Length: 95
Image (cartoon, rainbow, N blue to C red; front, side, top):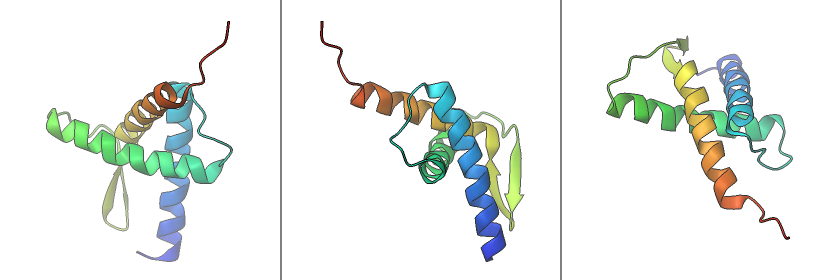
């Protein structure tokens, strides 16, 4: 994988991670684009695993340097990952 392909992959993962964080309703620290990229990549792994286990179709897949990157499942996985982390790290409100 070349440097341009890697940058493109990080950019797409960042966008998917940002959308997933918005849907999940929890911001993971102040990492910005880097944190969104990490959430997008983890979301792609989780989402692709869920889609494979449940026999769901690959709805929208981009191929970067011959490798598939599942856009929809990355967003779904990132939202799920963000929601779970939000439940774990959510601060309890004091009354």
